Length: 571
Image (cartoon, rainbow, N blue to C red; front, side):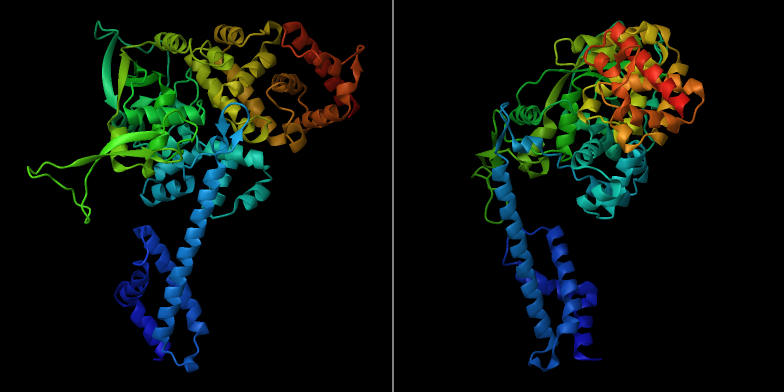
């Protein structure tokens, strides 16, 4: 056996004990090295040994052991220097994050996407034999989002992903925000192994049973640790179909919430409602969803605390430690403590001192819980608790749909067409805009003669006059459109005009023509037909009236119908 092979065998004997010793010897000169860092350096050493085997010159006067020792020491130094350069770049970037943006007092860091490491969590969950959670997470994604996850796990770069999926930077960032939404991430941590959809609990207003107590509500207190455990076990539900989505708060609102928790400041009570469904007690969140979901997200390192918060220096007590890291006591053997302060700006949960992490877990929320609620009770309380808060018109409107139909609308709004194809912003999924688009589409498709200008009036009408087959029929239309829309026509389905195209497609469906002819009409409309006059009036002239009054909407639909049928007759 030659000297080179003998030394390599010696380095890797006993689980590479000598190789690790060579690395550790040099690493002891540096501080702040975690076990994960050691593993990275060992991998780097393995790579260097592979190169050294070919580059070693026996006539150099050095033995291979001397040569490889120098190579490993040099590689460790290069790796440390590289990491220090990265830290300096991060520090420079952190400073630049203070750059003001706009006139609202926000800074650049407020616009960064979540720090939640989706790829790492997926790998950890899979390796932890929690494939059911990963499967549930993936099933909740759109097709484009699933492809992004697959390519990220294959370590594809962002530019490769965007090029492969033909995504703009804005579209890519929109998809990434969707991947990291609370409703998605919660599936990866859920203790329940069943696949989750909104249909796990089918809600009907007549499913309550006889009240078992005269109490209507009761007060309680729960620690954040307890609430998060219940969220992971899904014994507290935040996905009631009448409730608005999570991610409603700005970065500064999230940061101020965490700061208040860490200071022990009082925070408005959370409001829950107990509903008996199929003889099982389900606890729904009525008020406090943003407080709970943002605390949950922060505990999972889902975001860094923005630098634009009211109070960022948090005082706390920590044990006095000696040089060996052991606690110091006085002459009566009572542990000594010292006062400290910590700047929480730019920090994730895992970067807080242990004392502040414990304080976060131990913080108690006041709880008000309504007992034995019917579906009508829950709808009443959700609307009541949101009256004085910035709930959008769309979010308020859906509370008038009733639970069953609100659930159907939200399921439709989660379809791939809206997430991947249409010209919709990611904010539309949070503020209720997409559910409004679906409600308007159903009205235009099946109830145009009863068109209502106000969203809440539409929802009231649909609740009283629609049947499930209307929702099924609308969903089928969306599935058909998904197959035929082109890049050019997809962007025409925006929050302003989608209801017109949905309504027109419903009328087109009666012709039994090939669906591709509809998108061909849309392309022709985009190019020239929008200017063509029908009965002396063009669509452009009608569209100049930015209103959803019934007379204007019906006039627009009539014009589109005539243009469509004329176009089909010419083909």
